[in-house]
Amino acid sequence: AEDLKVILGQMGHRVSHVARTRADALVSAQQFQPDLLICDINLADGSSGISAAHAILQTQDIPVLFVTSNPKRLLTGDALEPTFVIEKPYLPAQIRAMVSQVLFFQESQRDCFVDVAI
Image 1 (cartoon, helix red, strand yellow):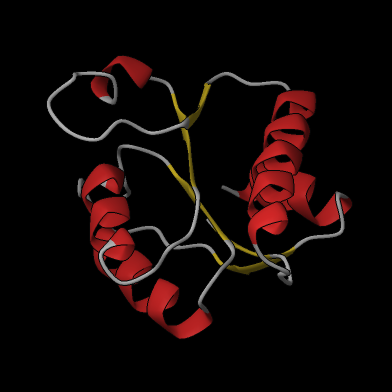
Image 2: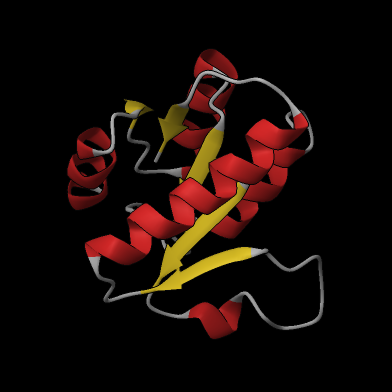
């Protein structure tokens, strides 16, 4: 998360909060109303980033980018599958390209101030 925070900061984006648990992610997403949610599958307390993203998407319409070492857990066909996935280990250029692409498509739908929650 700290590595992503540095990359996003270098891109000129503000990282509103780094949530380490599902519960923290739900509270921070409600508080900060980010324009982009970046998730891992496994969170610090053993909770699920997948579950956190699904819960956040029940109340907010924001794009979700998963950055994970196990993308196959996302691509099961059992539920809605994410559009944006980067596999770990990643190169900073991959993060920059994907975030730019996600935000470009999001901005084409509405004007937005970029506020990223990790």
